[in-house]
Length: 82
Image (cartoon, rainbow, N blue to C red):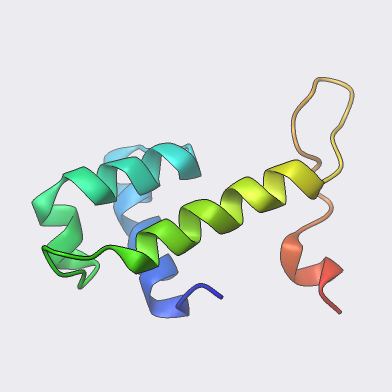
């Protein structure tokens, strides 16, 4: 499970710096010290960012796709969990 505070902080970073891809955002947070500081991640471990990247990959593999090959926006992992 992803820490909600970490996810919100990462999404704020993505919004402010124009990072639209969640996978790219995970990579950037992993590499950029300023992003890591803002997301309150330590210098040694990045378990939170890795968990988020793993969950994104799992969601991509199981989510329905529309005709263009993109994920359908009508179904989210939150709504399918209930």
